[in-house]
Length: 425
Ligand SMILES: Cc1cc2nc3c(=O)[nH]c(=O)nc-3n(C[C@H](O)[C@H](O)[C@H](O)COP(=O)(O)OP(=O)(O)OC[C@H]3O[C@@H](n4cnc5c(N)ncnc54)[C@H](O)[C@@H]3O)c2cc1C
Image (cartoon, rainbow, N blue to C red):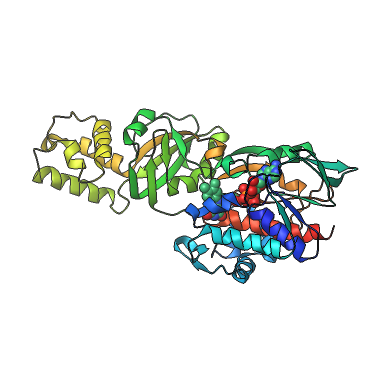
């Protein structure tokens, strides 16, 4: 059940192998999340080699090794190609349909399923999976009625973006069937900061070419700039871009660099660590170069106020904030700024620090981390080790990866293999 990324391909594959398949979805059309994925362009997968691909899932990525060896990017693109979807690789190895239309991917998968005889039923919400003697017997529908089945593929997605149909109810059903649900939390999600007033003052400011580093601290004294005592660089177990875009919001920070790091940051926060974000606003300049340029500008334009001068470096509202954080009086002209104060400014420009305190809720994350314990699902068939004939795929599993097409590939690979295995039942 669930006509999303994993459910569509699972149904298609099971039918292709000769099974009689009924695909149930609570919404009025298939793949609503596919339609909005990749800003409606659908970042289907990634060109990264398999070993590197797995690292984007963190340590749990190893669980997908077998699945990716059997159905990976080439097989997926070949299948989509059969249904008219040509693709192209873009920056960061991200693969999109050449048409730029996510709907083409959804339609291709739907055609794959229907062409092989899958019956698709919309507005068909499943409320329960029925079991007898640890074997699947069928499902119950919200509108009443039971359907008998020899196998059920649970493909109901995570708890993110519930308007697309994935409300997290699949976790409830899996738990009801005896599965362990590893604690759920948001991933690929904007982060909240302790410095709310400063964030609010910067709301809407987007910085293009900045470098973010993340530091964890366990109980050391706070410092306003630079790297503090007792701080360690946060380990991010997958490659992240060196520089990129960051966006300030009224609650904190967002944008590609933040979403990418958010999985590791949320993990660290959940384990009780304090996480500091340090933004290098001028990654292309060394500390010495910034010193020299500031000094030169102070000499060339001695009667400017600091905030006006900083507007030549950063957007106006950020210049205001930096000037305020420097604690240099507003009406002091820059030629009267002392060397130690200039050093403080350099520190701010190279390490504008924020205390990260949490994230937006699961619903606002692009994916849900946590989920059905991987120990309880066979990684070669995605059949439950608890209930025979139950298959669990896609975002429901305790897997979450960075942006870049990795999450959809996982949904497609797990769905495809589960479809094949379920057809045997
Ligand atoms: C805004 C956004 C953009 C994204 N962009 C990308 C991207 O470009 N690339 C990428 O790799 N990943 C992306 N993702 C993540 C990716 O879309 C998901 O990880 C993926 O869709 C998960 O697939 P799934 O099959 O597990 O679940 P879903 O695709 O969410 O499908 C679940 C389906 O189950 C149905 N359902 C739920 N409960 C029931 C029920 N009780 N009865 C019947 N049906 C039910 C739902 O209606 C839905 O159709 C994005 C996510 C978001 C939110």
